[in-house]
Length: 87
Image 1 (cartoon, rainbow, N blue to C red):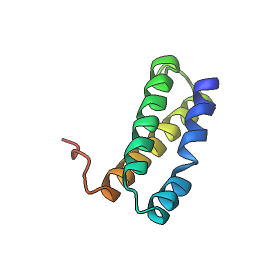
Image 2: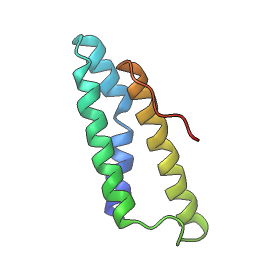
Image 3: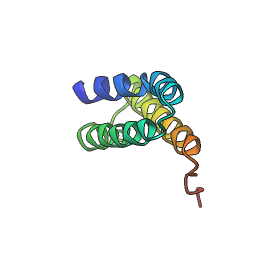
């Protein structure tokens, strides 16, 4: 699915974006990147049912969701914010 590929592509750029932000002393690179991640995840979530799938497809989509959660959490931490804890 194209939305899955797009999300994988943008998530894979996290280390590069962090390095660019560090090298240029520009934390806004991370903020803008996180907005892009959220937009890509929103498209993925809207177009790719997770719980309705079975087997490998479901496992992949759950893994993508966990990866997006990790990247967003780490990115927020880098700019001095925290995710809201689970209740």
